[in-house]
Length: 145
Image (cartoon, rainbow, N blue to C red):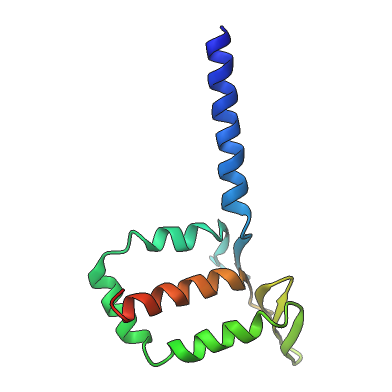
């Protein structure tokens, strides 16, 4: 009985530590609601740490293709992420007309994009550190590392 209790305690502790590690970077949140007949309602919450980890399993041929397509944009994206991290809570774009509202900002170190329309709502929230990790991995594969 004591061995079973120790095993359960070890497993429980491992799950807590794994959960804390996975969620330390935050969560990527994507919400899409379409307000039309047959419209979709998609709500995804993904641990941000899972994205860079999952990228390690991408085959080399796909890395080459992605790196070639992103080569011109990488210096710009890297500079943008670096600068965005300097402004953890800043409003960059807010456009409102009578049918739509679009907002792009950083909020608590995350890039937040909100689009509200009478037909749909799209909300994306992604930690800047995750975007930075992805750009670093793309740059590493583009340079042949």
